[in-house]
Image (cartoon, rainbow, N blue to C red; front, side):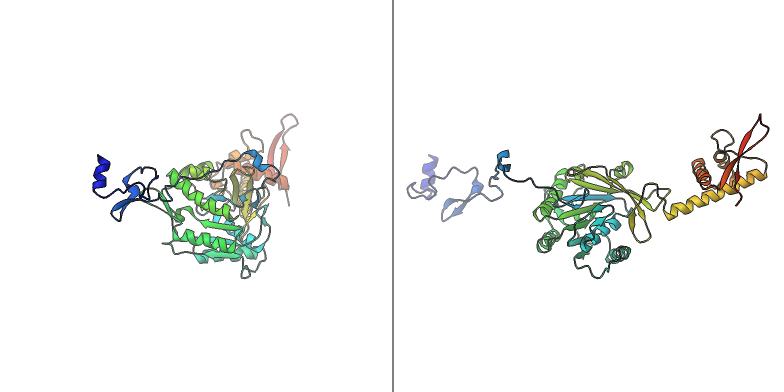
Length: 399
């Protein structure tokens, strides 16, 4: 009856004349549209078309060499993939990543204790203004005796602060590409850089930092670009309060960590040595996790430092404590109240910390100063008293 009614209405032709004959039934009316007084089939959109996959077996590998992992920075920054480098504001992560950019562009082959590849490099600076980066580039070049104005492979982009997004989050929660991401990928295709640095997550990710699907989708976009064009992309980030406290450098959703294969973290300045930093490999799926490099500010930029090496700042602070130690030692001897080097009652560190002139210096700092003074021969232990009741105290060594 229903078919007869449709025929009466002129909406169905004879099967031998109907070009739709043999087509499977439609799942919904949306698959059809009125055309010439009848209903004609509309092809499903490409978004609705079933995805095509092709599984393989290990036999496909026979007779071929496995692809070896390449590194932009050996053990730290893999080529053809995405790395996140985190560090608190003011820690110096922009400084050391600018080093990497300059060294790659200049073909210097080393960066803070590891070997690196050379080639074109791009810094997409969405936070630091041009004059700040220029200052860094010129200082770093001076440190390595490079002419900063003869680096044709070093490229810098400083987009308007209102146009720094790489992706936008739509109302349905999905991400869409922003014009800057299209420009970035096009630039990579044209220039084939070995390194691209993006500063930073907060400036380029217009989504919810704790939304797992958005985070994974955004990082997958960058990883896809890195893989397809064989470039290393480093994304700078600020750690969360917890990430700063435990030294992991992570922030927001765990998917920021889980969705990348390499992560670096730069520590804050040390309390007693503001020139010191530690660069740590906190994640590496292609290499060894846990590498920790001690860095030290050298006046122009950061350099690697030997374990236990004191910076000029730390050396000056140590000398100040030593001066206070010697002054208090002279004072105690003048008062007839000698002190000794043992850990028992009457030891110099324990007594000096109670003196009003100690200026807040801790007992541990006084003990370290005492050991340095003994090592240099600036002080000595003197024994007094009868043979049956010998006592020890510390005195200066006459110069």
